[in-house]
Image 1 (cartoon, chains in turn purple, red):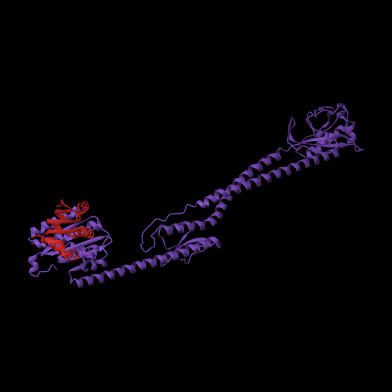
Image 2 (cartoon, chains in turn yellow, orange):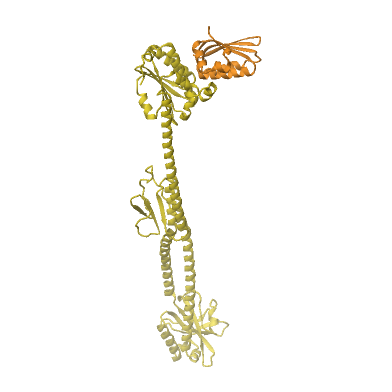
Length: 495
Length: 106
């Protein structure tokens, strides 16, 4: 596991035996599974659903926090801006008021005084003030007319069609005007009227005795500022959207760093489940995930060790079984002087191919046993066997066919002619015989024991000239050779 | 070929005449025929027309013989053909149940 590869938070390391093969991040490769079986399998990939869930749940939260912060900041900005505007307007009004001669203002009584020096001077002051502060749209002076709460214009700075002295101003909707007699005031809300939109400001004009003789009023244009605020707001929204995009990207990257080890672990588990026992992870996060990765690797190593141990044991068991089989084969052959032969499957296949095929009988139901008997009896009668030989052979075939019904359920019988006799093969796909019980089945004396062990074999052993048996968990194959009596008498052997 | 069994009853003595083969396909019939017998003092099986017996047939026969003997019923198998008797002999039935139980065909 491992090898020379550059550091990454997570990497795949696959030990192929000769070299280390590194796969980066999520680029899973499908290739040959390096197992003892060497099979090729597709490896299931991780879809990253945990990462998606975290991203989907965290980005809206971050966006909400960001938006809330933005709104709060914007509100605070607006509030401060408004306060500054109000301060500026009141300052402007106060400054303008200070510049106006209160005594001179008091002497302006009727429209006839509009040609007076006092009027011109005050008007010039207002005009100069307006020129110096270009955001002042309107600037004028007013005073209480003396009739109830009625106000009248005194000096209007407008050059063209100025309001005349005594023009009545409807102050019903203007709460500020009354307050202006005591101190400078300014609107806190944007005003739109005949004169435009902006914020109003007022400051008292005092005479030399400190008495308020009028107010200077002005309409300060704040459209530019509000336009800029609107532009600022629009730009802020754009910035917010871009920021959200950047935050989403960065967040997903950060989350990926967190979820990637988990994804790698999930992939590792899936690969192990699919049979890729050589796969290991290398998680170097310095936290519980690293511990988990190391634990997975340790468990995988242990599993592989156990698997190899089991495979070795199975191999040993197979070898031992083969040894035991060979011992049984040799002993039985020796004791029976070559009459009874245990064969393996390959050897039996060769045996089956010997001779000339005559007939095959299926054995599927009990009455098929009689069919098998009749078939061999008919063949042997035609081949010139003696009645006794036929009787003995028929008995053997009856025993063999009965065993098929009893132990395998179904099978078949094949008759092949040999040069000096006949070979009858009885084949099935049953559970097989315990060949270690064969000695008892063949040689054990005692009827009751034979019945319990299956005395058919002892009968077959008694009458057949040669017996070949191959048995496994896939089925039993029995071949019985019967010499024709004339050849027996002349000492011919089937082998 | 199957098996046919004809039963004759007289004064608590039964004679069962077998015709055919005793093998895996016919042992159930044997059991069924014998199970109908009750309160017998003697049971005789006539094998004159039996053409074939294998170890499965003999195993069933053996079970039936043991049952009758344990119940005190006198049982015999008579007129056994030579080929069939050979099998009885190989498997040792006369030794187990007594020579007198098995009577060869004349």
